[in-house]
Structure formats: structure tokens, C-alpha cells
Length: 354
Image 1 (cartoon, rainbow, N blue to C red):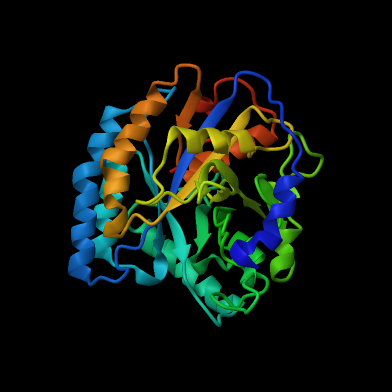
Image 2 (cartoon, helix red, strand yellow; image 1 turned 90 degrees about the horizontal axis):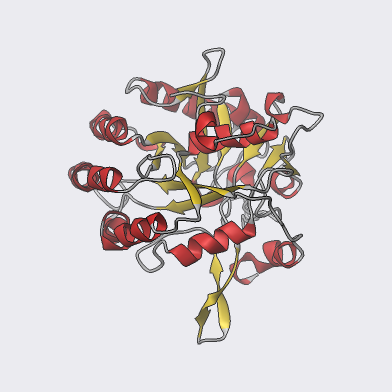
């Protein structure tokens, strides 16, 4: 159906009301499907990286969250396009700004063995540049966004993946969390929205549509189950403040673009949707996504619209907000599961460390 309404509209309209205790803490992560080689040659991609290396550090130094930390960015790099001349400068940018690189993968007509091999090679490539993270046992861990949104072969026509049981492959290769959703208006959109959940090892769409809530002090510690994968989605709902023809509300799906830049009103809408670990509604997860490797989004991400957003955010004295990477967001989700209290800044490295 149009814009995948058949998947998510009823769950959205039937969502329970959330009344969190005070104070509310908002964790903001920008998860970038970062593809500098998209419609470009290597020379052009290097130029795109130069723009980031020149302009982004200034923004990080200028603005600060409730913990005194600057804006952070998570670059989900397509591992099938690995090039040391691109990853090297990107790693340097991350070291300078507190940002991080995770794994993005486009594939089709694949097999479990094929995707496992691609992920292992991708990990090795990124590790050579000091990227990714490790858990307490020293195992390499990574965050994941699926190319073309088709996580676990969820496209109804089988496009963009081919691996019906992708969840256990991701877990076995060290994936700590998936950040693909929401994918609307793509038909790959899950019926489960606006909740931190675990997807189980089920075939195709079932794994996404039957995902179960992450909960505080749950009797089953799901993060230790190799057949379940933590999923932290971005917001998905109706934005009544922005209407087509002044009547039809536009979709809020967490995508920040030149035509739809980040604003304080969009952040408050995401906050209202209350994406959290069940039982801890005062810790709200806001994951925005973008495509920051292409020029049409540069001025939004590196120019005046993003500066204006950070300035307005810093002016909200009653808002406890925290700039986080995808890894830090997953750590905070696990800390919430364990019932941790106090300043969330203490739990940025709770399970996985750079």
C-alpha cells in the first residue's frame, strides 16, 4: 500500500500512552547511511570526505549537550565499497570528533555463507583503521544498517537481500544491534514500531513483525541469546504540524534531508513517541537517519540548518539531551534493561567499548 501504511498505521494509532517519570533524558543519534561513492568516482568521494573533515569538527567544538559533549555522528559505511583511502580519513575524523564508524551492507540474491563472509571481511577492513568496538571478553562488535532496508529478506518481492535467516548470522559475526528501522515508505517496514525490541531467528518478515520488547529486569536476558538481535528504531508517526495541501499530515520517519532538516519540533515529536526500553520510559531514544555522503545533504548536515538546530536545542534549559553514537545508544539500552539509575552519561560504555 501507499507509503507502507498497511504495515504501521494501525500499530501507530493503537499505541499505548506513555507517562514517564521526571526527569526525561533524550538520547539523540544520527545514523548515517554514509556512501561517498554513490554516483561518484573515487576522486569525488575524497572531495566529499574533505568537506566533512573541514566543516564537522567546527560544529562539534561549538555546541554541547547536557554532559558537555559535542554533536556525534555514526557513519554506517558500506563494507562492499571498502577503500583504505576513504576509510583512513574517516577514521581520523572520528578520532577528532568522538564519532564512530559501523557497518552498512548492500547485497542481493545472497546466502548465509555469503553474508557471513562479507561481514567478516568488512570487520577486518575496519579494524585495520582502529574502528568498531569490543565487548568485555574482547570480541569484536559492530552496529548494522541493512542496505535497501531489506533486513532479514523482508522485501515482499525478495529484493535487496536473499537471506531469510539473517538474524543469527548477524549475531554470530558480532552485531550488537540493528538500526535499520523505520524503513517506511518502503514495503520492508515492520509492523512493530516505536519500541526498543529484540528480533528473533524467524524467516523473513516474521522476525521483524514478531519482535518482542526489551524490558527492564526481564527474567530472560535476551542480549545473551545468539538467536535474538537488539533493534533500536527511529520514530515513525504522523506529523500534524506539517501537512500536504494544509490537510494531510506528513510522515515522520526520522529521515533528515535538505528538504526536511532537523528541527526542535521534530525532536519533540520523536520524544512524544517515547521510544524506550519497556519499564524505563524516562530514557527516550531518538535515532535519526540520513545519507550524508552525497552533496545534496551537505548544507543541511554541515551548514546553517544543523547549526540552527543545535543552537535551538542548547536553548532548551529544561531538556536533558545527550548526543550519542549508535554504540552508546545500544549501551544505554542495555543499562536500562539492567535497571541502572543516575546520570546516563555513566553508561555510554556499559557493554561495548571503542
